Amino acid sequence: MLSLKILALIFTLLVLVKLLFLLFNSEAWIKNTKFLLDKNFLITWIPLTILVGYFVFKNIAIYKIAAVILFTAMLMTITFFSVPEIMLDLRKRVKKIGVKKFWFTILIWGIFAIVVLIDLL
Image (tube, rainbow, N blue to C red; front, side):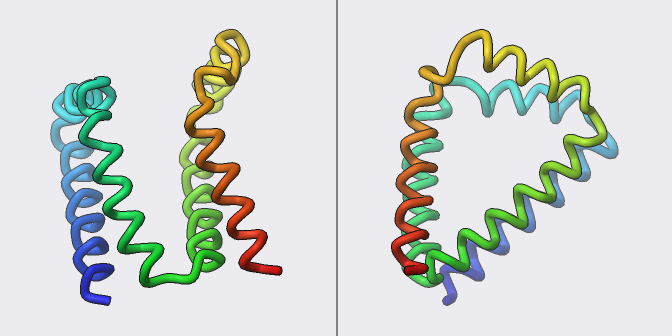
């Protein structure tokens, strides 16, 4: 359980740093966002995601994780309501490039959904 507390602390600190940047220096946050979206950073991001996932899945039942993801998605949706034009534009762009570019993410979400469903049955 200590590993989850450490992950929660990391999350909390990242959120607070982000909020401080957004309040006091939004340009710096935008510059950092560009760095985070760089493909080279993705090479680091995937192993970190696997590591965090290991500790989360080891300590929490998968159906509970799914419920938290639902809650998080709802919070994100509330955020997107403040910029509907951007979301509509994003929808058009995704439609234009097609879902093939998202095959890896679709695969992960599909596997996750199936595993949750099996756990619930």
